[in-house]
Image (cartoon, rainbow, N blue to C red; front, top):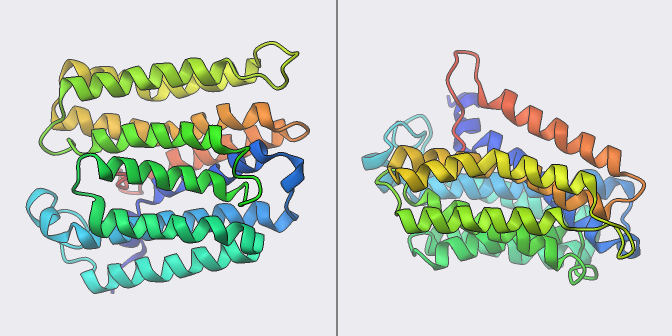
Length: 300
């Protein structure tokens, strides 16, 4: 019987936590005109988590032959979970994610959740091996997850933050392709330059045109940069597999500080609550990464 730890490894449990803030970013950017009932604040992050976990299970299902050669310790090639069970888990979590989205926002949420689910399945089963289409589609998944919090009627107003999250995801995904055999120095340099540009852009965001730069947005931007830039610079200096893997991990972990920097200028009365929630998510991820016996739960 497969134990819980194996399933947590299969779905990359610490990384799943990084999507919980996506819908909060979209909701904040869309503004009060698309305000949802209280239950949507809980259900939409849960929907995102289910869809992300589904994608991770499908990822390992699709990569099982490659992982048998390059990462035999993973759940499927190691024999701890069957390919059939991983696929079934991915399908089941997809259905649950769609159901939660429908319960949270009805047609407005499903109008985003359905394309998001399609993109996840297409990435895992078709596009992932492609060096350009793969990262672009993964970035699209992240952007759609942000728009999930805005709904179809608020998507235009949330497009900017969605593009920022998508761009970061594209860079992380591009670096992740070199986790085993190494990446290239130009690619690592390009990703680090994009991170620097993103930091400058989000640090300059204002809560209103008449106000100056938001100190909390600046703090969030710096936290984001400090989380992932050092590992990216290290990959530039030495574009080896271990350096690329570390840059990928830190890029995933930087999602929450990035969400914090994006959400704070758009949240008026709930700035403290939003920041506290995202801080709690970040802490939970750090705790989940370390298991009882001192090993790490996989994030990549």
